[in-house]
Image (cartoon, rainbow, N blue to C red; front, side):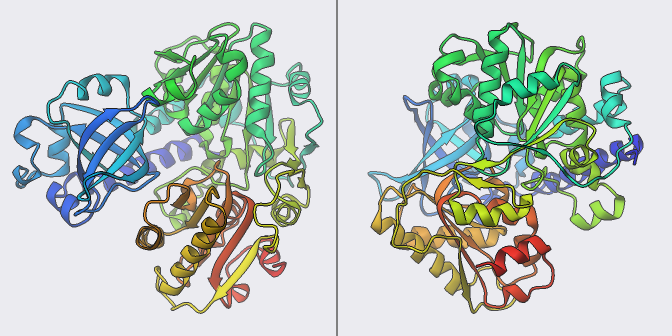
Length: 557
């Protein structure tokens, strides 16, 4: 199967249009409506930057608060618009046009303040430029609003699809034959850097599949050390800054300490989180040093005029979340490529509907790593030892990996009296209700009981639906107050995290087909070191629309 270039270009154009149309609606909506009715815009006041680089704000509790773990476009306005009552008929787009300074930012925690009318909000991700500006502004009024979609990233990938560079052609114009996935298994006692470097003597690309908790970040860091020691230039690129910083964290005592780790778009909190990491203005190769850069930025290095390849080695982390064209871009950036991901976890987030993707035949383009992995054109490995999951959890999660997952978890159990999970919690649920009251109360009750037993327990309460997640957040706040060790989030946004306990809520709605989709289900049920609770409708095992592997998982509980 040759994936048509025109189809690849059309996919990116269609996705760009879908994102543009969705954001255009927000831009054309009244800013006051988004603030007072839709709870998508928030007005607060800057207080200070803390020693760890996080920005501290306060917001009135009389209105909705920015969601924890959510990203926002944070900006300041001229004095005449600092009072939202002066916005009049201005749209959100009008406000953005009038901004005086801006940054992307992530809300990471809530806390009560001395004044009960306000809540303190801690945020990560501010740029140094925004920091310098906001610290000098009188009053410090800020607006949090919907983040601008990654237009530039998609535009970069469209340009990649037009490239006829030999390295791009090797990926985008190859004939892919779908085969059964048969990777070579790598146990934890096998030397990945040595194996990969041996492959690189004859191959330019190697793929490593990393199931949940198998230590892929540690392995990536280990390889980076070895390559930099030999004087090679190395780039690690990933979808998220969080993934990049996890790599940096693993290198604190080695490459970071020796000032050999650079990152593009280094934020104030990142610079303090990993002291010694250097800021890189652009994606440029540095012999014997490591550069960290997101897909968004590294894709730009490919299309903005460069001498190919830039790096001796490029490592793509979170490769399952890379579009087909992004993997081609990585190949153009580096002489040798290592792609590390998991085809059974989250694919790239696409705004187009699943139906349209299937109808247009876009699946191989969206699921780039899956397409390349199944073709078996490149050396293909799978890490087989999980350090996160206990024996029973590893056995069940292993169903998604043909029974190849082996637990090496040595974590002492926090709740030894509890049944070793995963645990199914079937309940009566109203059909069509995305916020089933009893199920939501049950989820929070389980969390509260665990926290009561051990205050340090880290818990994630997950659902696929934003409405369900919002209702869970409200119930947590109502019954438990501000508990910072409970994360309430959608499944799509938690890949890569590890918690002690996960509670997965599946409402009895049309969304069950997504809740039970293999990759989403796998992510939701593999975050916990201790236990996973699955709160679901009583008849879930009779549900028609699920894969055989998910059905086998549920029937085993």
